[in-house]
Length: 113
Figure 1 (cartoon, one colour):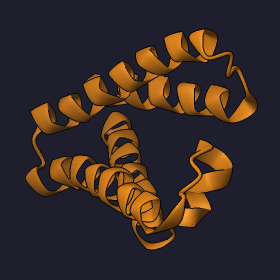
Figure 2 (figure 1 turned 135 degrees about the vertical axis):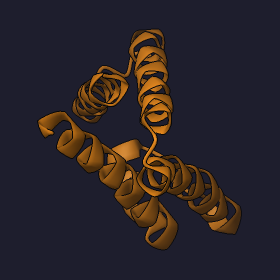
Figure 3 (figure 1 turned 180 degrees about the vertical axis):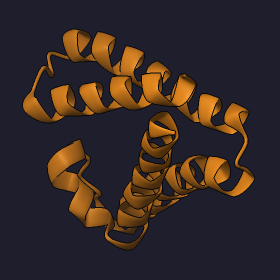
């Protein structure tokens, strides 16, 4: 039961991240480092960060299937793995990347279980 609550929280936080990206795309600049340059950049943040995170987070909540939670978890683990490698390749071991990596690993593990 406790694990399910954590999974709901992780999926809900994913949707919330998507909603922030959709409705306040310039607000993600400080945390993600993305700097939307003009309308095209803002649209990309709304569509990709907003749309993908809303869909990935909402799907398990709507379907209520463990496989959907696992897919979201695997997605987080892959993002985390790529982020970890990229942090060293790109010399971007900074606080926001470390926080993102920790969230991705924790959410990934919680959602896969």
